[in-house]
Image (cartoon, rainbow, N blue to C red):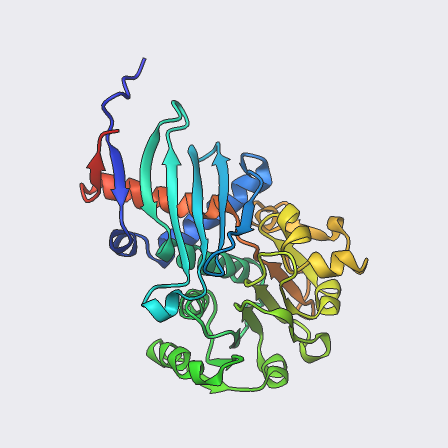
Length: 329
């Protein structure tokens, strides 16, 4: 029998997470866990997400177990809308990892950077498996904190030549434009309708509660990664657009209840059986895109297993390199 009584608790802070987990590591971790979910080797537990009645904050828990990767844990945190004025990111979270063999707490991992990089990895995985290979124009709807992560990750999946972008607050677009220029891409602020007319791949990353893109604006062959809708009532695109697309998601149960598909499901334009886990495409059990004219849509609701996957990478690398702080419980 293994003696685990003196195994130290690993503490991996935000700076160390940024040092150890890059886009490539996040992409591989998220792709692997999506594949495990589709095989039934990993599953998420029900999400708890509540308004706490203080500071306009939302707080909750995302948890799960990846049997294939032997990763068990919970991400605790939420959204504090006033944090930007305090010099903090609005999203605040910490990941708790547990030893699946004993249930003992094994690591505390900062979750703010990892949330951004795993969300970007999720849309990047969808682009890798669903976007047309000849896609040249990337559309960005949203220019907040996570948009730069999304842009950098997406740019590595196709040979994009240009970025077109729209944001409800136009004064935020130059910051995103600087990121595009830094990686060698032309950048053009446009209207929402112009964005739909030009873009081959579109990422939406906002906190909207109304459609920002309409069905008639999207050209044939477009791939959309809708990454902002993770709560009941949120909406980034026209439900008619969702219903007309071939829909993929991280987890069907979340897609139909808190994801972008919730509205098309509610009005009867889309059924649960028409939504495919992206892991099925990764595993080769679903063909993914079947024609150059098909509109594909990835409903990225954000699942706890994504957080656990990237946190596990951070903890493992910190441990292997002797970089983590430690404590004995």
